Image 1 (cartoon, rainbow, N blue to C red):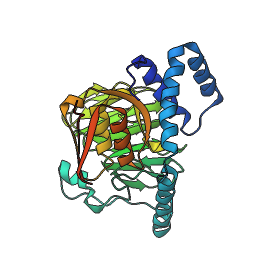
Image 2: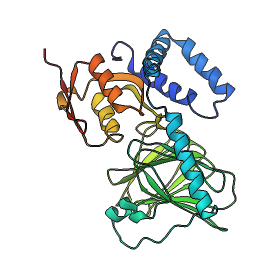
Image 3: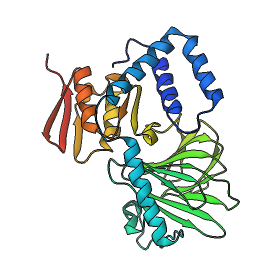
Length: 315
């Protein structure tokens, strides 16, 4: 599974192609471009085979599928919409500050538990995905469409609708202009990454204002500072229920994996710079840890199911 014998750019490209082809609305043009990339270089084919091999190994494991998780979320969404008659209203927030915003004060309309991924249809027909431990409030009326992200991460594929649409976060406002994009709250910043169309990002404090196009991203902090964010957010495969590793550091992957688990997931800094590639099913994070231990020079120690450490394997 280690990607050190394959050039890192090829591994990164293979992982991105894998995420794209496993997503929704893949076009024939995109398939042709993938075949051209695959045939252009022997390293491309080797990288693709490595990513595919890891994915196939996990498909043989009988775990709860991402489809079943999404289906359950959709059933809850339908019951929720029926109960409200299709009208989603956002109650005002009374307690100021980051902690109150993060907690959501019980006002979130749509949410996911830790380790859960949810897919929802908004009243305008747009598609909304929520990553692990996320919460959003929704307010649509005759004049506007508003989302408020309290915590976690969302991905939105907008619908054709003349009403203005925006997403509020603690640091600012994100206004899509007919697009598909992701927004994540992390490290007291708002992270934005655009796949299609254009997105405007405005700071709540100060005059910072930027318009992003496809493949662009930014981080917005509470002081109104914008900084470039290269490429996609940390795990572009999460909507398909996968954690993608594209030659990335083990430390970064474990940080991301910890978002989907209860309890503590710690690792020794000595293993943080190990590199790996693959596509891992988020429905069973313990299986991911088992495979890491079998494939890398690391030891996974489970003090309890909620206290896990990753350390170098003794020589």
